[in-house]
Image (cartoon, rainbow, N blue to C red; front, side):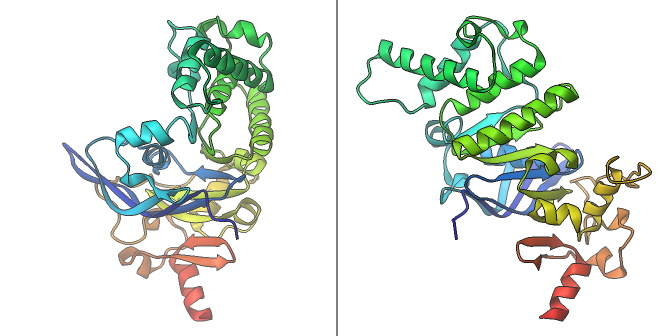
Length: 334
């Protein structure tokens, strides 16, 4: 069995603010195998972006790591200092595609100057190349990547500025930049949110194609289960900072076991005759429910759920669910 490229175990984070201590992640579990695409899904405030920051090592200094490991190629990223993360992981072995490429690109520098600066720092290169030859090598690599992401006049792009491109073109440029340093893992944080639907479909197809071509593992953060169905091999559903369900995409979306996953599917216009909402709101991380986090909004809740937190159990093969009803069924079967 292939070892996971990324393996997050029992991750629990809290942060201190003027309002008190907030439990922002609580016993999060997920794995990504080489060459696979994992979707991370949940409402705003469920911890998706915090999880991305934890993997990238860009958490606020007020964050406390209470328990857990983030194993990347067998190495716990939580044990690395900022120097090691910059030198050996972030931007190199782990690439990142942001939600808004216009904010990520500096408007006063050319595309080439920004992306080539990243390549000089992180990209692998043939040995014994002098500075001038190395720059030509990186420039040629970047031009080829821009062509692969279907940017016309790739050579001229390097001398232009971010404002000279559309939102979809800027996102393609960011994808090329993320691939330029030959990462093993690519993290995409809702990269299609700021672009139109037609361009969104093109970007999704491009990411799927590039993942196969480069043999990348990918963590794709989104709130849209329709995107997950098109793009992802596996999916992890997050709620209030916890993993509530995970498994193969076709299994989780066709036969959801957690009430929250079912509720999200009912909200999707492609899966319901009438567009439904989920009553209530995601609980505050400063004062989460004492039992199951989803208890106040769950149509299937029982008295047990109010006071006791369920554990993540195996529902069927690689299908994991964090729900008392599934937990009870597993205990009975055992």
